[in-house]
Each structure stands twice: as C-alpha cells, then as structure tokens.
Image 1 (cartoon, rainbow, N blue to C red):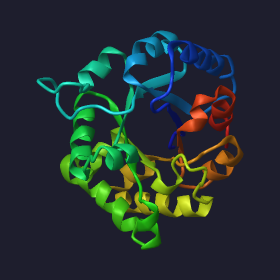
Image 2 (image 1 turned 45 degrees about the horizontal axis):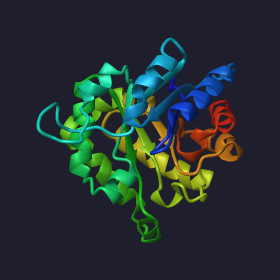
Image 3 (image 1 turned 60 degrees about the vertical axis):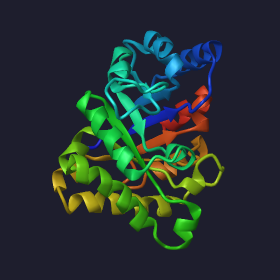
Length: 248
C-alpha cells in the first residue's frame, strides 16, 4: 500500500533561532502523525536540522542540487555533499527553479539521475502554468516533464522517487486547485506510468503542492491518487504544518 508523505519546503526562509523554534514545536506536537514527514531546508541549515532531527520520525532533505558530482562549479552543491548531512530527499525541478533559473526538462532529468545515483530520493516536481491550463495543455506539459525523466532513467527509477504535482498558478498564490482538478492530473500521472509498469504505478507516491493548508488538506488528501503534499508557506508554521501532517 502506498505511504502518505508530507514534505515541507522551507524555500529561502529561516534563521538558526527560527529553525530551532519551528523544529522543537514540530517534534513536540508530532504524536498522532501517521504520515511520513520530511522537511527540505536551505543548504546552510542542513547541519542544524540533522542534529535536531537525528533519531526522530522526521526526515530531511534539500531543495535542489547540482547534476555534477564534483568540480569547478562555483556555488553548486553536489549529492554527495547532501549525503554528508544525512539527507533522505532532494527536490528537483521545482517550478521556481524552472521558471526563475531556467532549468530545462533535460537538466531536471540529469539532476534526478544524479540524486538517485547517490542514493537520495528525488521529489520530482511537475506542473503547468496558468496560461498552459487555460490552453488546455496541462497533460501535454506534465507528460513532457515526466518523459524527460523516463527517457533518461526509465520507469523503474520511479520505484525510488516521489512525484509532486504542483500547478504553477497555485504556488504561493493562495489559490488552490480544487480536489477534482488536482485528482484529475494525479490520475493522469499514475495512468501514464501504469501504461509502462503497473506495479510501479501502484506504489508511486504522488504529492500535491500548491497552497495546501490545514483547511483544505483533508479534502485534497482524501482523493484516491493524492498521496500527501509538498507544502510551502504552511510548513513554516508548526501548528499549521502538523495539522496538515495529521490530515486524512
């Protein structure tokens, strides 16, 4: 049976003091959480998070990584470096990386492959912009983003990965895809994978991300193909994040 995974993406937020308070509150209120939970934090705070969460039920990871193993890539962070800090997950292909920093489908596929080669679990983000949804090409866009990874790494690689559907128009906007809208795309993703490997599709964890809050998490997570969430702003509030983790 598929597990439920709720992962917090802190984005470019945090201070040592804020992180300490947030993680302490998260651990203190963790009783009753049945989902798997992780936090993906800025690179400078990986050591702090590792020290705080080591031995707890909360996993941790990074928000991005280089496709390169080592070398003259000033400012980049490799998968092996993330391993030094005990990371389990790494987000690849977040829409902000694609749109702001110009990461192509092919580059995302390279990062995905590099993460897996190092033993990390990539959280592969896919999703369409508002204009693409209005054009009616959501499935075409999401399918293209998946195909880049499938072409490079194969469908079997998804047995050691997570997919996060994040409609770009719902990220940080306060606008959330309706449960039916989100479920439709999740079903498309699982169906696409099922056409290639039914067993992989059955076990594939597909998260929803896009203005998930405690108020809408239960309804979203009750959809048959939604297996938790990749949470942005709400992950910075311990009470809100815990309520999401306990939803469904």
